[in-house]
Amino acid sequence: AVALLVLMAATLNWIVGLLATAAVASVVVNVLGFCRSVMDWDLGISEAVAGMIVLGYSVDYVVHLAHMYCEGGKQSYHTRDRRVQFAIRNMGTIIFAGAVTTMGASSVLFFCFMVFFFKMGVLMATTIGFSFLFSFGFFMAALAVVGPEGDQGSLLAFFRRPATEVVPVTEEPVKA
Image (cartoon, rainbow, N blue to C red; front, side, top):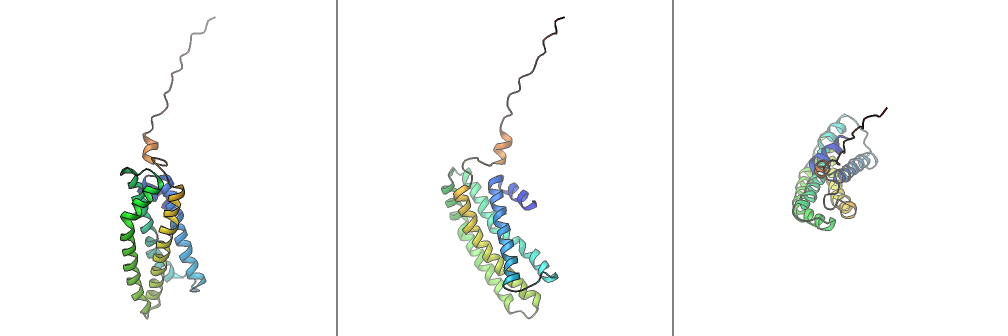
């Protein structure tokens, strides 16, 4: 619930916030599933600490793409297709470069002798991989299909709408 509120506040759009939250939740579930099923790790103290540190990576790419999608509406791109293209064109290369450098940094941790650092490296690499996959594979595809167009889902537009005109009720005197 907190992630949804933060993503809605970041994008000022409840539809984009909802789709972004679904993408982030998918990343977290897949990373935890990978750690449990593939790596056969139980959720201990070191996994919980490393998981909390890495959790921010699962949000990063989605938030950047969500922001650019909403920014596209301000730049006169009002259709879903145009906004998705705008977001990918403006953030795709940056996100790809960030993923490559973070994967490189996490791969160094694979060679550590301390178990915590090895697990941290695996968690970072797995999170970056799933985050990249769900950001472009799920989130951008979802925006292309059901993302808002124009000011659909905009919180600003919702709060700017004028209230319906209230007609005062006048009471007529009661005749006896």
